[in-house]
Image (cartoon, rainbow, N blue to C red; front, side, top):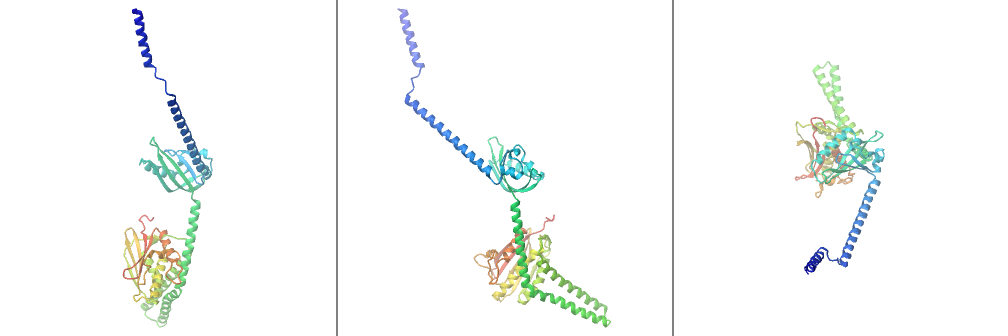
Length: 421
């Protein structure tokens, strides 16, 4: 009895333990729902992987078919990818570029400068970096040096290192276009100078006639003094006058020849005030014939500028001629032109102010637009050329109306640095 009672108690405890350790069978509907959820997740992941592969293939296709050379590098500038255009530009198989430092395809000086610049930029620890308009010189496998325009993009990864993408474009076509543009600009400027000289022909003839007449007069006086045993002091004075007038005529002809001659721009140390005076010598007769009074306010002790004298004289001639024509066309009662030079900061300013009718009130700067003119016989290219010349000298030109009436043009040129650059 006691055995049977103990056995029953044991079986009861065992049954209770088994019922507690074995969970209930899951619901088939719940299993089906979980299975469907897993299927959807697998489908979504498979689709995402497909889209990722498609995007990766698209980016590779873009990189492989790009006309520009594309390189990828790690933070140490070691190349990890080069597209076919990079191989074409560098005349080497793209696979042979992988593993090389980027500096190996640059000139030594360019490589050192680039690495220093890169280290300074990466020191900022920004998540991404971009910079462009960098001109470098690469060295091809055939030892040919080619200028290239380079743009950089860098992204900082989780490990703190940067990954770089480098875009390179052959700069030779751009440089050829720039050179052709400069040549066309030079030809147009030369044509404008010839036009100015043609308009000055009558005034120049009168201007040259004065020193030549003085030479002839004093030569006759000297001859008479010699025939009559005149005072040696008078003879010496006359010869000095002859020499001075001859130099004056030669100076006018020299300025005229420089304006007519078609030369490559030559930037030399230039005295602002002397440049103004040489232009005044050319235009003095024309201004006198138009009954225009000229006022000069030339600052003393101006530092020199680095410029092409002929081109700066061309700007001043154009401004003075425009001012004279403006005054004459408007028949202004006050007929004055003021030419001023001054030192402003690190620049030298030339200002030409007239008493004419002024510029368009809505937008005075329109006068610099090509083919815009306020003159019935004007071409509208002179002031545009002047502004281009100023820009080539790292300067600028501004136009404004004067409150008292008339127009003012200011040419600003950077002063020459002490080291002569």
